[in-house]
Length: 129
Image (cartoon, rainbow, N blue to C red):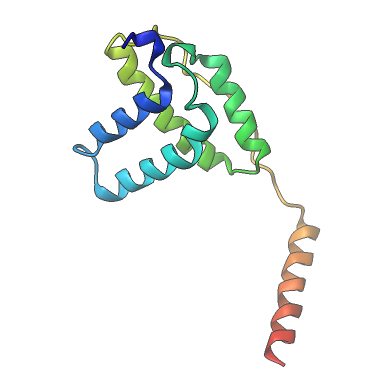
């Protein structure tokens, strides 16, 4: 199969299988969760050579709009970057910048927290009765 025709899904699954030998079981489980629940559904259908900085930046925004935390988004991107660095090193894809910008973490207003805590308190009372 031509390198340009390799779907990212196929490549990242191969990368994940290789990683299993070098990481702890818990790390592998986290990587697997990220790959199968976030990466493959969002960008797995692209050919490996179609991936670029712009597409990854768009993915960051899309995940943020789905209300994922910045930490979760960074974890997802870390897995993608790790797989792409291997692809770069193996000459499967031309190098491109992996520098991305992340939105600021959404902060809850104090009043929202107070209302939420009050609702939890009220619910607790109702449940106890």
